Image (cartoon, rainbow, N blue to C red):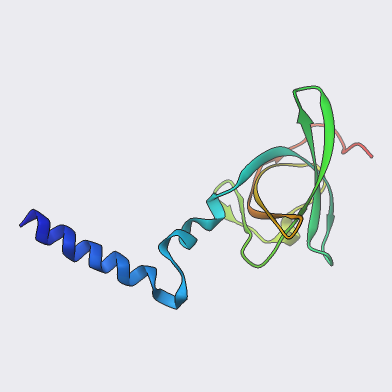
Length: 120
């Protein structure tokens, strides 16, 4: 009986994997990749990019350019937002992947607002 249940459930999952030509793993795509955290320094709505200032080794600042695409998931306090809601001074956690030499955000979580104005 237990084996039959697993077989039936497994068949259902296999069917779900083939929907729209995607594998089940693509459902988790926004959560794969590397993560950085920092302050949004600039947002370019036309190019759909943002620059995030991070700290390396706790002391050296580095500006990282991140591209957004149609698959980027944006959230603030677990609530979906649009890329138009991002602004300089937001503190963010970005999960990204490197695609064709560019860093492309899979998930951006706004975690707060900087207590100082963004530095130029």
